[in-house]
Length: 423
Image (cartoon, rainbow, N blue to C red; front, side, top):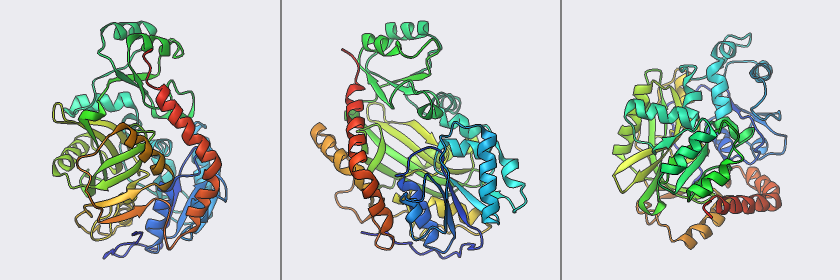
């Protein structure tokens, strides 16, 4: 097991803290814990917005201070901005913002002036086109950008009415996949429970009855897992949309199976995919951290972009360079005027999310699915929760997860099975 800080030859600015910004009720978030450890291990003071004082993030030895604040992400932006500014005043000095969900990333992008011009020195964050993160987080907006810039993505339709649904049902090749069109729908009134496979026109009509007159869904071609591979790209881009850190890997298992959060993944060198991602980011002019999910379709040899998260991904600690740089460290160094040292990624390294990998393993073995590019043997393992130098988050996760988590996993499993609609 390796959960080390790596060797960072460039000294970080330890006078500038980091703040984990998250909205919504998901206390078992390993990505936030990973960011706290990543910067905390190299001496950067770390703060976090948490649901309460007993979340895994709140008990990390590397956390300087927790700010309990329950939000949903659907609150008025002014309320959320005021809350962030109050936290900034309590910290009392310029602080790097590290968003862990789309709501936070979009809020920061759309309110850059208010967050930077403050009486405590302002927050630090990548300066990006204010409208771009919201568009990238939207399934419809992302598909439009892919079409504009010639990047492959699943063939998609965005029905605007029940008549559009009927026209689609009459001509589509099934199965298809239904997703919520906008990222924020998952916190409000989602049309579907995550990625939902629909096997027939009849199944689509049945499901669409609950979508109302203006369906908030995007319908996409189904990419059969037997003919596809799931790849991920994590990177940090500077103000010129040039990559200061860029990593590629393959997702072996997720939960729910084939359509959810990464449960196990490996670092795999893929220069073609790295170039593809870098070109797309340059063309759209994005600045900051990205977390991309792509599916390689072996039928036509294309990498198809499924999701663009304009923020740190939960599994970002899979990736670290030989010089000890991950995307969060790269951002902190860059925003504080430090050089980001170059270095190759740790090919063959493995990442495991303990509480969801076991049920994912059982599900994948039943399906017989294999990932051809996964290394036969890992060069090292990074666990999402377990760390020899920071054990409290692991035990806190177990305490909060065991009973309600088991029930939640079962519900996700049942939802994923019901998601195949075609009877």
